[in-house]
Image (tube, rainbow, N blue to C red; front, side, top):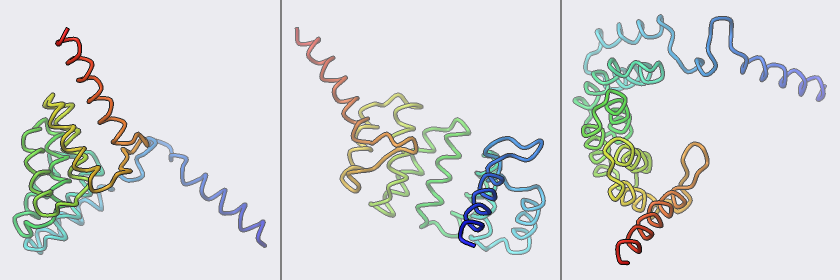
Length: 180
């Protein structure tokens, strides 16, 4: 029975990772049109329910519909302004919408609400570095993150301290060349 259970679980796991016809790999997180419609209907019925707006924003986020996620998250923040996770998600959507300054503003608000909020600090560094070309600001954001979590990593398992060291060493090399 144990072997049958193991084989059945393995086959089921493999089947869950194979996309259905017409589906792209990674699409499993995307909300169905029916789910989105249901959430939209719920926001009409209960416009003061922050949780519904958050779920709608998350569904749009997962479906790469950042232009629709932004107003949903904004409504949630208007109802419950003290949620650092929603502010961070809103910041990520602003970045996707090519509004990096607004993204940094949302990450900073999230950090002010929860000084130990790691995700906002990580994302702030990303936007500062890649979108606003502010290496020093990015390194500072990540150093503050490392004070909270010395083993913080990006999704690809690169450690934050490696990246901080990389940028600091690059500046040390530049400073040495400038001194000569």
